[in-house]
Length: 89
Image (cartoon, rainbow, N blue to C red):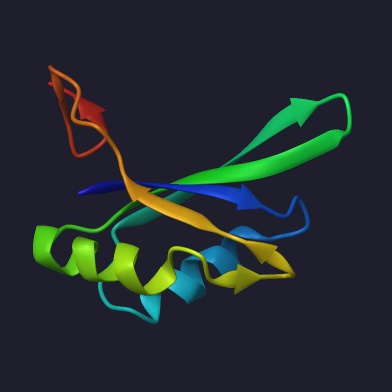
């Protein structure tokens, strides 16, 4: 299941994010991105957890948690037709 992670501090490194999510179980990948705004930027990420039940547990345990002083938003991503596990069919 693909998860969206929002409100990430721009100072968070990929390894830190991956470590946080891997602490909850198997993660296939995590990709960081950054939204540019007039007031600077906030990061976001896409994390893929292969087991749907485990992914729901990850959302419940990490949504609202703090990482480098920022309260994370973790939620399942909406399924998109033609997209499987983050790759096009």
